[in-house]
Length: 170
Image 1 (tube, one colour):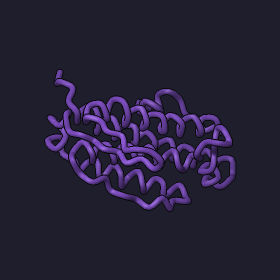
Image 2 (tube, one colour):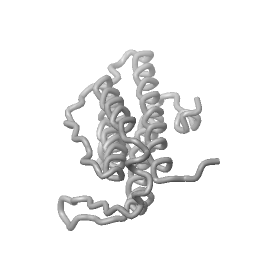
Image 3 (cartoon, helix red, strand yellow):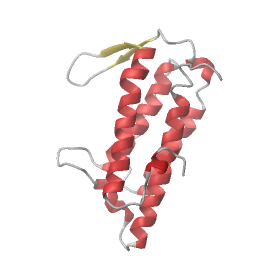
């Protein structure tokens, strides 16, 4: 058994869950087509009026993943325009995120636990973390929050998803 490293506790987890999210989106599209409506109707789903829609949940999950991988490696996170309006564009964004993450070598992340991560905030002072605390207490919880919300929105809309889909074991 290999030891848990900063890389092994981040990039592979993000990659697996983003891959699962691609599958959920494909199932949602198939579900909509079976019921003869436009799949892009799902993109504005919300569980409550004051929450961001499914489209934003997917974007933010991806942004958390690529931002974390970049920051842990001491890189500037790539910026993507938030201009997706269709499922195919959203899947393309996830694919682009996965490509970026595949380009970040473990050697750039492992051993960087003490690296300072500074997150600028819009309406308050920047947040400061050590890399290990950033991963465990900011990036992973935020990533899984938005991934889980995406799953819940699709499941609530009747898309046939189960726990094995969430865990990418289907």
